[in-house]
Image (cartoon, rainbow, N blue to C red):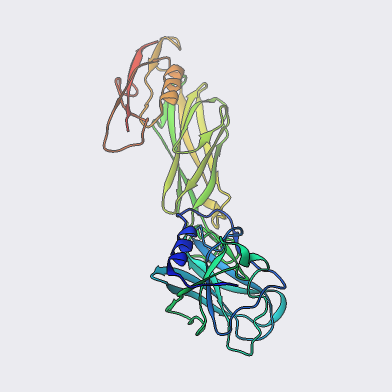
Length: 400
């Protein structure tokens, strides 16, 4: 391998290997191992500063869970992860000894890394023959370069200065896993719960609590009621794919649904999916229903998540309300009792008004200090007021 001692060459190669930040979604492999490689200097420290394919530089923040090399004859080899500090200085993020052996040698580690960190190795003193230090044929590529020093191996911690540059691809590889909760454990092999930084050996835990709140506790036949289904996550982990379902009892018609996030099925029964609910947070579904018969009604809503729930006893809630006969002698459909529209989106508000016998009037948008975007904040006619059939009700939505 020809020696390149010009500092400008090394700086250019380091710039070639620089990368921008990104987010990890699945484990990736860095570097490369191979048999029958070229030897390297005795008592040397090497950091792979630039490479073609495969990559030796970390591109995605996460955790390195394994370092690998191949065919080490004698003791003294160590594998490293370095962080460039500038001016030929590198912080030593990891330093692990390699047990001599043939074939691929795997060393489990747990090293938190960020974009720009690089793989490397150290060799021990002579008479170690240092076989298989560099990947065969890589010394001819100007894109494959490493910085090195041949006076001493890298320390186990602290910093090391590497002042010279050589061409070649170092015989070292790594497995990089995402770390979604930033707890320093790889999500795929080291962390049983990648959503919760307080849990590594135990699975995630989301305790869903379902409650309901109706606008009206007692309604008349042909009236519209709006029921809010609240789903609170009392667990310590993120609840994923929260499905909220509710069968419709006889005499109750589903008019519209509005989830706080996600989407709902287009028709009855109620079936909505909230993508995520953070620990301590609450999601909701607004259900617009219409009573088509009198008597007691039991509306039961249930929530379930693909995140384990240790307490399923509170995953359901049953709402009881009574539907009475109309007090008015006017025949059904001759008037409209305005439903409560606050919190509904425009489509659900329109459906609720039409089900009650009213019509949607003008829609305006204003900025408010609180509330969700594009949800009703004001209605021109208060809820429960009886008006003539077909009366238009204007609404004001919260604007961004």
